[in-house]
Image 1 (cartoon, rainbow, N blue to C red):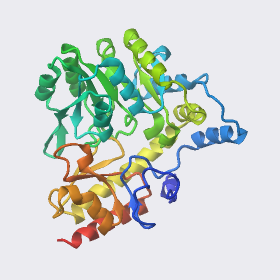
Image 2 (cartoon, one colour; image 1 turned 45 degrees about the vertical axis):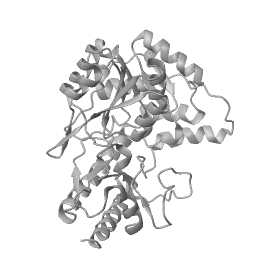
Image 3 (cartoon, rainbow, N blue to C red; image 1 turned 135 degrees about the horizontal axis):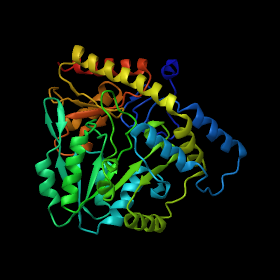
Length: 388
Protein backbone atom coordinates (compact mmCIF):
# COMPACT_ATOMS: atom_id res chain seq x y z
CA UNK A 1 0.00 0.00 0.00
CA UNK A 2 2.79 2.40 0.87
CA UNK A 3 5.37 1.35 -1.75
CA UNK A 4 4.62 4.44 -3.85
CA UNK A 5 6.33 6.57 -1.18
CA UNK A 6 9.58 4.68 -1.62
CA UNK A 7 9.91 5.82 -5.23
CA UNK A 8 12.73 8.34 -5.70
CA UNK A 9 11.75 11.36 -7.80
CA UNK A 10 14.61 13.47 -9.14
CA UNK A 11 13.60 17.09 -8.49
CA UNK A 12 16.91 18.68 -9.38
CA UNK A 13 16.73 21.27 -12.18
CA UNK A 14 12.93 21.50 -11.90
CA UNK A 15 12.73 25.04 -10.42
CA UNK A 16 12.22 23.41 -7.01
CA UNK A 17 12.94 25.83 -4.16
CA UNK A 18 13.79 22.90 -1.90
CA UNK A 19 16.53 21.63 -4.20
CA UNK A 20 17.84 25.01 -5.36
CA UNK A 21 20.61 25.34 -2.76
CA UNK A 22 22.36 22.04 -3.37
CA UNK A 23 26.15 21.83 -3.59
CA UNK A 24 26.29 19.19 -6.32
CA UNK A 25 24.40 16.27 -7.82
CA UNK A 26 24.92 14.16 -4.70
CA UNK A 27 23.41 16.66 -2.24
CA UNK A 28 20.23 15.60 -0.44
CA UNK A 29 17.85 18.45 0.42
CA UNK A 30 15.74 18.10 3.57
CA UNK A 31 15.16 21.75 4.44
CA UNK A 32 12.18 23.37 2.70
CA UNK A 33 8.76 22.09 3.81
CA UNK A 34 7.42 20.28 0.80
CA UNK A 35 7.33 16.54 0.18
CA UNK A 36 9.37 14.46 -2.25
CA UNK A 37 6.24 12.41 -2.99
CA UNK A 38 3.77 12.66 -5.85
CA UNK A 39 0.52 14.26 -4.80
CA UNK A 40 -2.83 12.48 -4.86
CA UNK A 41 -3.68 10.79 -8.18
CA UNK A 42 -6.99 12.68 -8.08
CA UNK A 43 -5.18 16.03 -8.13
CA UNK A 44 -2.82 14.93 -10.91
CA UNK A 45 -5.73 13.68 -13.03
CA UNK A 46 -7.66 16.94 -12.80
CA UNK A 47 -4.61 19.10 -13.52
CA UNK A 48 -3.78 16.90 -16.54
CA UNK A 49 -7.29 17.37 -17.94
CA UNK A 50 -6.85 21.14 -17.86
CA UNK A 51 -3.31 20.98 -19.27
CA UNK A 52 -4.39 18.77 -22.16
CA UNK A 53 -6.94 21.35 -23.31
CA UNK A 54 -4.02 23.70 -23.93
CA UNK A 55 -5.98 26.88 -23.17
CA UNK A 56 -4.82 28.74 -20.08
CA UNK A 57 -7.04 31.80 -19.98
CA UNK A 58 -8.39 33.67 -16.97
CA UNK A 59 -9.91 31.45 -14.33
CA UNK A 60 -12.79 32.02 -11.92
CA UNK A 61 -13.67 30.02 -8.85
CA UNK A 62 -15.69 27.08 -10.12
CA UNK A 63 -18.88 25.67 -8.68
CA UNK A 64 -18.14 23.27 -5.83
CA UNK A 65 -14.71 24.81 -5.15
CA UNK A 66 -15.56 25.93 -1.63
CA UNK A 67 -18.12 23.22 -0.85
CA UNK A 68 -15.35 20.61 -0.94
CA UNK A 69 -13.43 22.59 1.69
CA UNK A 70 -16.57 23.12 3.80
CA UNK A 71 -17.25 19.37 3.90
CA UNK A 72 -13.59 18.73 4.80
CA UNK A 73 -13.73 21.11 7.79
CA UNK A 74 -16.96 19.58 9.02
CA UNK A 75 -15.71 15.99 8.74
CA UNK A 76 -12.16 16.45 10.01
CA UNK A 77 -12.66 19.18 12.64
CA UNK A 78 -16.40 19.34 13.34
CA UNK A 79 -16.13 22.98 12.24
CA UNK A 80 -19.18 24.37 10.49
CA UNK A 81 -17.97 26.91 7.94
CA UNK A 82 -20.21 28.95 5.65
CA UNK A 83 -19.32 29.72 2.05
CA UNK A 84 -19.81 33.47 2.46
CA UNK A 85 -17.01 33.47 5.06
CA UNK A 86 -14.43 32.27 2.53
CA UNK A 87 -12.01 34.02 0.19
CA UNK A 88 -9.12 32.99 -2.05
CA UNK A 89 -5.50 34.10 -1.85
CA UNK A 90 -2.49 32.59 -3.67
CA UNK A 91 -0.99 31.25 -0.44
CA UNK A 92 -1.33 31.41 3.34
CA UNK A 93 1.42 34.03 3.64
CA UNK A 94 -0.42 36.18 1.08
CA UNK A 95 -3.56 35.91 3.20
CA UNK A 96 -1.72 36.76 6.40
CA UNK A 97 0.02 39.70 4.76
CA UNK A 98 -3.34 40.95 3.54
CA UNK A 99 -4.71 40.71 7.08
CA UNK A 100 -1.77 42.68 8.47
CA UNK A 101 -2.39 45.49 5.99
CA UNK A 102 -6.19 45.43 6.39
CA UNK A 103 -6.35 45.37 10.19
CA UNK A 104 -3.37 47.38 11.40
CA UNK A 105 -1.55 50.61 10.62
CA UNK A 106 2.09 51.45 9.95
CA UNK A 107 3.97 51.28 13.27
CA UNK A 108 1.49 48.94 14.96
CA UNK A 109 2.71 45.86 16.81
CA UNK A 110 2.26 42.35 15.43
CA UNK A 111 2.88 39.63 18.03
CA UNK A 112 3.96 36.10 17.16
CA UNK A 113 5.53 33.20 19.00
CA UNK A 114 9.17 32.32 18.49
CA UNK A 115 10.83 30.23 17.22
CA UNK A 116 8.83 31.23 14.15
CA UNK A 117 8.79 30.61 10.44
CA UNK A 118 10.91 33.46 9.07
CA UNK A 119 8.18 34.79 6.77
CA UNK A 120 6.06 35.87 9.76
CA UNK A 121 8.75 38.37 10.64
CA UNK A 122 9.33 39.28 7.01
CA UNK A 123 5.69 40.04 6.20
CA UNK A 124 5.48 42.17 9.35
CA UNK A 125 8.62 44.21 8.67
CA UNK A 126 8.00 44.68 4.94
CA UNK A 127 4.59 46.12 5.78
CA UNK A 128 6.22 48.61 8.19
CA UNK A 129 4.73 47.04 11.31
CA UNK A 130 6.74 46.21 14.44
CA UNK A 131 7.39 42.50 15.10
CA UNK A 132 6.99 41.57 18.77
CA UNK A 133 8.15 38.16 19.97
CA UNK A 134 6.26 36.03 22.48
CA UNK A 135 9.01 33.44 23.05
CA UNK A 136 7.96 29.86 23.64
CA UNK A 137 9.65 28.27 26.64
CA UNK A 138 11.51 25.00 26.09
CA UNK A 139 11.15 22.85 29.20
CA UNK A 140 11.66 19.10 29.55
CA UNK A 141 11.92 18.66 25.79
CA UNK A 142 8.68 20.50 24.96
CA UNK A 143 7.78 24.07 24.09
CA UNK A 144 5.26 25.88 26.31
CA UNK A 145 3.44 29.19 25.86
CA UNK A 146 4.45 32.03 28.17
CA UNK A 147 0.98 33.44 28.79
CA UNK A 148 2.20 36.15 31.17
CA UNK A 149 4.54 37.48 28.49
CA UNK A 150 1.77 37.30 25.87
CA UNK A 151 -0.64 39.23 28.07
CA UNK A 152 1.94 41.90 28.82
CA UNK A 153 2.65 42.42 25.13
CA UNK A 154 -1.03 42.34 24.17
CA UNK A 155 -1.68 45.22 26.62
CA UNK A 156 0.49 47.60 24.62
CA UNK A 157 -1.69 50.24 22.93
CA UNK A 158 0.03 49.55 19.60
CA UNK A 159 -0.64 45.79 19.75
CA UNK A 160 -3.22 45.06 17.05
CA UNK A 161 -2.57 41.53 15.75
CA UNK A 162 -1.51 38.20 17.22
CA UNK A 163 -0.27 35.83 14.51
CA UNK A 164 -0.92 32.30 15.71
CA UNK A 165 0.78 29.36 14.00
CA UNK A 166 -0.90 26.06 14.90
CA UNK A 167 0.42 23.43 14.38
CA UNK A 168 3.47 25.47 15.21
CA UNK A 169 6.42 25.71 12.83
CA UNK A 170 9.18 24.82 13.72
CA UNK A 171 8.49 23.55 17.27
CA UNK A 172 5.88 21.10 15.91
CA UNK A 173 3.52 21.74 18.82
CA UNK A 174 -0.22 21.14 18.36
CA UNK A 175 -1.96 23.38 20.85
CA UNK A 176 -4.63 22.03 23.19
CA UNK A 177 -8.10 23.46 23.63
CA UNK A 178 -7.02 24.93 26.97
CA UNK A 179 -4.01 26.67 25.43
CA UNK A 180 -6.03 28.06 22.54
CA UNK A 181 -8.73 29.30 24.91
CA UNK A 182 -6.15 31.16 27.00
CA UNK A 183 -4.69 32.78 23.88
CA UNK A 184 -8.15 33.84 22.73
CA UNK A 185 -9.09 35.21 26.15
CA UNK A 186 -6.00 37.42 26.18
CA UNK A 187 -6.74 38.69 22.67
CA UNK A 188 -10.41 39.35 23.48
CA UNK A 189 -9.50 41.19 26.65
CA UNK A 190 -7.02 43.45 24.85
CA UNK A 191 -8.84 43.95 21.55
CA UNK A 192 -6.15 42.12 19.55
CA UNK A 193 -7.11 40.40 16.30
CA UNK A 194 -6.03 36.78 15.80
CA UNK A 195 -4.58 35.89 12.41
CA UNK A 196 -4.23 32.12 12.53
CA UNK A 197 -1.89 30.21 10.22
CA UNK A 198 -3.26 26.64 10.26
CA UNK A 199 -1.63 25.40 7.06
CA UNK A 200 -0.23 22.28 8.81
CA UNK A 201 -3.59 21.40 10.39
CA UNK A 202 -4.03 18.09 8.56
CA UNK A 203 -0.56 16.82 9.49
CA UNK A 204 -1.12 15.84 13.14
CA UNK A 205 -0.02 12.66 14.92
CA UNK A 206 -2.19 10.70 17.33
CA UNK A 207 -3.21 11.26 20.10
CA UNK A 208 -2.95 14.97 19.30
CA UNK A 209 -5.83 16.76 17.61
CA UNK A 210 -5.98 19.97 15.66
CA UNK A 211 -8.60 22.46 16.84
CA UNK A 212 -9.28 25.53 14.68
CA UNK A 213 -9.17 28.43 17.13
CA UNK A 214 -12.17 30.04 15.44
CA UNK A 215 -14.23 26.91 16.18
CA UNK A 216 -14.05 27.46 19.94
CA UNK A 217 -16.86 30.03 20.08
CA UNK A 218 -18.60 32.67 17.99
CA UNK A 219 -17.00 35.37 20.13
CA UNK A 220 -13.54 34.05 19.26
CA UNK A 221 -14.46 33.54 15.60
CA UNK A 222 -15.48 37.19 15.41
CA UNK A 223 -11.89 38.31 16.13
CA UNK A 224 -10.19 35.67 13.97
CA UNK A 225 -8.91 35.41 10.42
CA UNK A 226 -8.00 31.78 9.73
CA UNK A 227 -5.62 31.05 6.85
CA UNK A 228 -5.58 27.51 5.46
CA UNK A 229 -4.53 25.65 2.34
CA UNK A 230 -4.35 22.16 0.84
CA UNK A 231 -0.80 22.90 -0.30
CA UNK A 232 1.06 21.38 2.67
CA UNK A 233 -1.48 18.59 3.13
CA UNK A 234 -1.42 17.40 -0.48
CA UNK A 235 2.06 18.57 -1.54
CA UNK A 236 0.83 21.10 -4.10
CA UNK A 237 2.43 24.37 -2.97
CA UNK A 238 3.37 25.14 -6.56
CA UNK A 239 -0.32 25.52 -7.43
CA UNK A 240 -0.45 28.65 -5.25
CA UNK A 241 -3.82 28.45 -3.51
CA UNK A 242 -5.21 29.09 -0.04
CA UNK A 243 -8.49 29.92 1.66
CA UNK A 244 -9.25 32.48 4.37
CA UNK A 245 -12.09 31.99 6.83
CA UNK A 246 -13.63 35.19 8.29
CA UNK A 247 -17.05 34.95 9.94
CA UNK A 248 -17.16 38.62 11.03
CA UNK A 249 -18.90 40.55 8.27
CA UNK A 250 -17.10 43.84 8.97
CA UNK A 251 -13.68 42.20 8.98
CA UNK A 252 -14.58 40.33 5.83
CA UNK A 253 -15.44 43.55 4.00
CA UNK A 254 -12.13 45.17 4.96
CA UNK A 255 -10.21 42.07 3.92
CA UNK A 256 -12.03 41.90 0.58
CA UNK A 257 -11.08 45.51 -0.13
CA UNK A 258 -7.43 44.71 0.55
CA UNK A 259 -7.53 41.72 -1.81
CA UNK A 260 -9.16 43.83 -4.50
CA UNK A 261 -6.41 46.43 -4.25
CA UNK A 262 -3.79 43.70 -4.84
CA UNK A 263 -5.75 41.83 -7.54
CA UNK A 264 -5.35 38.71 -5.38
CA UNK A 265 -8.78 37.14 -5.65
CA UNK A 266 -8.54 34.85 -8.72
CA UNK A 267 -7.01 31.36 -8.59
CA UNK A 268 -4.81 30.15 -11.42
CA UNK A 269 -6.44 27.57 -13.64
CA UNK A 270 -4.59 24.59 -12.13
CA UNK A 271 -5.19 25.67 -8.53
CA UNK A 272 -8.89 25.85 -9.34
CA UNK A 273 -9.22 22.14 -10.08
CA UNK A 274 -6.43 20.96 -7.75
CA UNK A 275 -8.01 22.53 -4.67
CA UNK A 276 -11.38 20.92 -5.30
CA UNK A 277 -9.94 17.49 -6.19
CA UNK A 278 -7.72 17.40 -3.10
CA UNK A 279 -10.51 18.07 -0.64
CA UNK A 280 -13.05 15.90 -2.48
CA UNK A 281 -10.94 12.84 -3.31
CA UNK A 282 -7.63 13.08 -1.44
CA UNK A 283 -8.45 11.81 2.06
CA UNK A 284 -7.19 8.25 1.57
CA UNK A 285 -3.94 9.58 0.06
CA UNK A 286 -3.50 11.87 3.07
CA UNK A 287 -4.06 9.09 5.60
CA UNK A 288 -1.52 6.85 3.85
CA UNK A 289 0.98 9.69 3.53
CA UNK A 290 0.69 10.64 7.18
CA UNK A 291 1.26 7.01 8.18
CA UNK A 292 4.42 6.83 6.08
CA UNK A 293 5.78 10.15 7.36
CA UNK A 294 5.09 9.14 10.97
CA UNK A 295 7.21 6.06 10.33
CA UNK A 296 9.99 8.32 9.05
CA UNK A 297 9.71 10.56 12.11
CA UNK A 298 9.95 7.56 14.42
CA UNK A 299 13.00 6.34 12.50
CA UNK A 300 14.81 9.68 12.90
CA UNK A 301 14.06 9.83 16.63
CA UNK A 302 15.31 6.28 17.23
CA UNK A 303 18.36 6.83 15.03
CA UNK A 304 19.42 9.92 16.93
CA UNK A 305 18.77 8.30 20.32
CA UNK A 306 20.91 5.32 19.34
CA UNK A 307 23.69 6.95 17.33
CA UNK A 308 23.98 10.70 17.82
CA UNK A 309 24.10 11.63 21.52
CA UNK A 310 25.03 15.22 20.63
CA UNK A 311 21.56 15.80 19.17
CA UNK A 312 18.17 15.99 20.83
CA UNK A 313 14.87 15.83 18.95
CA UNK A 314 11.98 17.99 20.08
CA UNK A 315 9.24 15.39 19.73
CA UNK A 316 6.81 16.52 16.99
CA UNK A 317 3.08 16.53 17.69
CA UNK A 318 2.26 17.68 14.17
CA UNK A 319 3.61 19.05 10.84
CA UNK A 320 5.96 16.93 8.74
CA UNK A 321 9.03 18.62 10.18
CA UNK A 322 11.57 17.75 12.87
CA UNK A 323 13.25 20.38 15.09
CA UNK A 324 16.61 19.20 16.41
CA UNK A 325 18.73 20.68 19.18
CA UNK A 326 22.42 20.50 18.17
CA UNK A 327 23.84 22.51 21.07
CA UNK A 328 25.95 19.59 22.29
CA UNK A 329 27.83 19.26 19.02
CA UNK A 330 31.16 21.00 18.59
CA UNK A 331 29.77 23.11 15.78
CA UNK A 332 29.05 26.80 16.27
CA UNK A 333 25.32 27.31 15.89
CA UNK A 334 25.51 29.72 12.98
CA UNK A 335 27.72 27.23 11.11
CA UNK A 336 25.44 24.17 11.39
CA UNK A 337 23.80 24.49 7.99
CA UNK A 338 27.08 25.08 6.14
CA UNK A 339 28.83 22.33 8.13
CA UNK A 340 26.29 19.67 7.17
CA UNK A 341 26.27 20.82 3.55
CA UNK A 342 30.06 20.73 3.27
CA UNK A 343 30.73 17.63 5.37
CA UNK A 344 27.59 15.52 4.94
CA UNK A 345 26.32 16.95 1.65
CA UNK A 346 22.92 17.35 3.30
CA UNK A 347 20.98 20.62 3.00
CA UNK A 348 19.02 21.43 6.18
CA UNK A 349 17.19 24.52 7.42
CA UNK A 350 19.26 26.64 9.79
CA UNK A 351 17.75 27.32 13.21
CA UNK A 352 19.01 30.89 13.03
CA UNK A 353 16.27 31.56 10.44
CA UNK A 354 13.61 31.08 13.10
CA UNK A 355 14.56 33.72 15.62
CA UNK A 356 16.86 34.60 18.48
CA UNK A 357 18.27 31.74 20.56
CA UNK A 358 17.60 29.23 17.77
CA UNK A 359 21.05 29.13 16.20
CA UNK A 360 21.86 25.77 17.82
CA UNK A 361 18.93 24.06 16.09
CA UNK A 362 18.33 22.63 12.66
CA UNK A 363 15.02 21.76 11.02
CA UNK A 364 14.76 18.76 8.74
CA UNK A 365 11.90 17.53 6.60
CA UNK A 366 11.40 13.72 6.70
CA UNK A 367 8.77 13.68 3.91
CA UNK A 368 10.94 11.67 1.54
CA UNK A 369 11.54 7.99 0.73
CA UNK A 370 12.80 6.04 3.76
CA UNK A 371 15.95 4.96 1.94
CA UNK A 372 16.83 8.61 1.33
CA UNK A 373 16.22 9.49 4.96
CA UNK A 374 18.45 6.64 6.13
CA UNK A 375 21.21 8.04 3.91
CA UNK A 376 20.66 11.54 5.33
CA UNK A 377 21.03 10.35 8.91
CA UNK A 378 24.06 8.16 8.11
CA UNK A 379 25.76 11.13 6.43
CA UNK A 380 25.04 13.47 9.35
CA UNK A 381 26.27 10.86 11.81
CA UNK A 382 29.48 10.29 9.83
CA UNK A 383 30.12 14.02 9.59
CA UNK A 384 29.92 14.32 13.37
CA UNK A 385 32.32 11.40 13.80
CA UNK A 386 34.93 13.62 12.15
CA UNK A 387 34.88 16.03 15.10
CA UNK A 388 34.08 13.74 18.04
